[in-house]
Length: 297
Image (cartoon, rainbow, N blue to C red):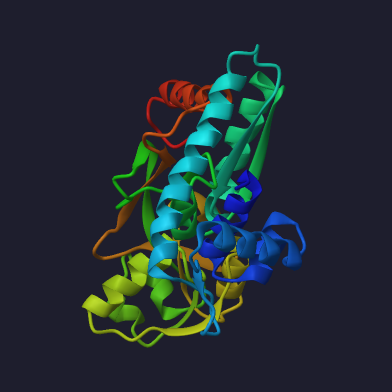
């Protein structure tokens, strides 16, 4: 049994698709197929039910995956810990950042960190908040700078700022004259919305459902500049955090009548070995918070 076989099996199990697993691991599809068949032959069991269109684990495969996940995580932590005995000359940090934070919050953090730790490499993965949370729990990322409100208890959280959700409307809209906006005020409005996987989207749609409002979503985008441009052009309204609204010509941002606030911060998985490179990033963020006295970074 080879480590490579276990890694191929793990990725195929996560993605439920051999082709996608091959693309993610940057190997050929036959390599993964052959490796899994050899693994099944060695174990004497069938790991996958191939009778359906989508690859699915057999009961035995599910049990084996749980053990494989733990074994691979322990191996990964062991390698990291051993490497830490060497003098830290270079290191890598993988951070997941939603588009909203990626455009407005992360650049300031990244530039300051790079000035202090130029020998460390940061790889940014732009994903929606909910997707980043899942990737953190699967050990695919070291950190996420996300909306941490309501995050899993499996994640360690470092709050960095508290932000308000605002309703953004075209400047020419009758709604623009309001001091605050209720969800009933926008019940019949066209909405341009962040895509699936966004915590902000999930929050707003949840509040609308509670109010028995069916949202009229006409366009979706994860590009904040695009959403603001669509609002300014009169296509519809949207909901954004106050940190990204800024002074956008043609658009006005108004608080909700029933204010909504969320916490933004750094998240990483509990009970996972933290490399020196990763610890340096945690310490840096904590220092940054002290310098800003807990205000938005």
